Image 1 (cartoon, rainbow, N blue to C red):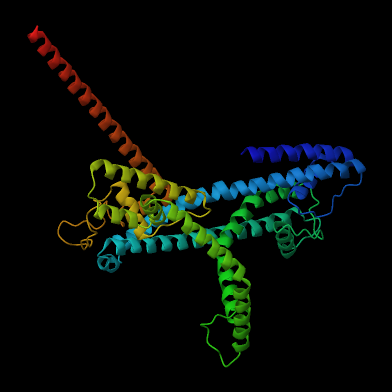
Image 2: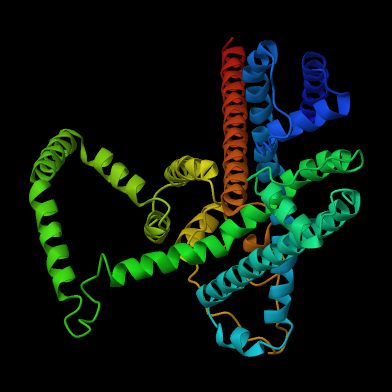
Length: 448
């Protein structure tokens, strides 16, 4: 909002300055500044004075940067928030189709928790694909209405120039894409104000359209290009020979690969030296530190929790320390995922490991096959099921945010319990010391 207001203020200010320097009307100054900010440059209004040309350098730079900030805000705030809301709705609908709709067979076949987890992943993928193509269709529809409707308005406004509808379409298309040939320009007093408003509205519309194209059509083109490259320029070893046409390409590829391997001997030697140094450092540590480092490398894969809980025969204090350790380093492992551009999705083993730490399941219990839907007393989507309404995969938060929130809460809860235990120990110790002092005083009194 503030950036948009800044752009409007900068537009009005520059229009007044350039109109004064060049002897234009104020409306013509608005029109010139608009075509400058949006890099259309139709060329019907140009600067002739030295002062105007000198002021253009800072003025155009600030204006173009402001437009870029607005485009970035549209993509970062409006589009991302809209994607989350639409994805949430479509995900709920797709889940209901799988669970409550006509695809009962898929739910019945998913007997274990892992199979239900994988089924929920398929529901998420289907919802994401549907959201992307729905957004693309919507943005293309708005683009067509914006383009065709604008052409009709310009055709009516430029009656004096006798524009045809096709000429108006041509002018609108070259303007929206900021080509700006300048062979057609608005001249009437009604066309210029509409041109300013129309081009400013084109900024968010084109931003949304390009973003949706990048999620769908551009991805397909990229994949097709890579596929064609694998069959022609960079063939893989597993590709068929196709009558010897790719034989020379495969031979050349193998030669290049061999040269890369030979050229990487120095890198391999340096890597071996680093490994040797690492082994020397590990030998200097005691066995306990080595075991701890290995555990840290396995954290997040589910190994550390299952191994630790299955052979957890130590004292309560040792178990608590191990739990604090696992919680703290799980949080540390998840923190970098918050900064990733796209939300990270975790596998079933990782989820099982983190959920055991959060204490949502009995850590010592084995994962049993999920009861079949339709049996007596079995809900179609129970609350603790991966396909249920309260599933972590159905949360409004990203998976990383969901896990971090609950791991931090679990760590806080454990620390609070440990603090309460320490308080009770101190009170009991103080009470026992008080009783001992009282008994000694009574003995002294009797002896006297």
